[in-house]
Length: 137
Image 1 (cartoon, rainbow, N blue to C red):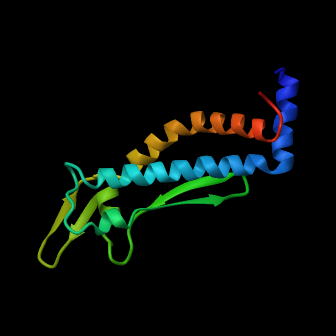
Image 2 (cartoon, rainbow, N blue to C red):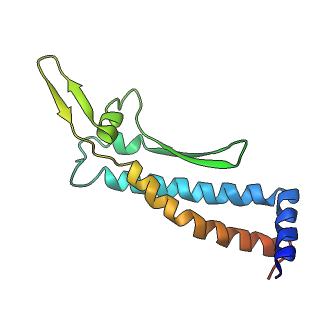
């Protein structure tokens, strides 16, 4: 395939809206990979599971933006107000004392790990879409 043919193929994907579908599929897979990684990190040496509330509060999502698609992962809720202090660290104040909680990130490493797989997944999905719309081999 020449660069001109490839360019025409990509324009066809954009015109038909298939490129948005590709981005959504890749973002969904990245979000699920982040969720798996985050949940795995909450069950390790640094964070022990007592109730499972933190692990169950980890939720992935994808969102279409003006410039593309975003994969997002969040943790915490009213029931799990301590999610951020585990991720970022900080000062914990109790009634009688305060102490410094060290960072024990569980979302950031899963984001970084999932991001590594996105380029390969994107290439694979673009190739598959080129075949499904009848262009490319």
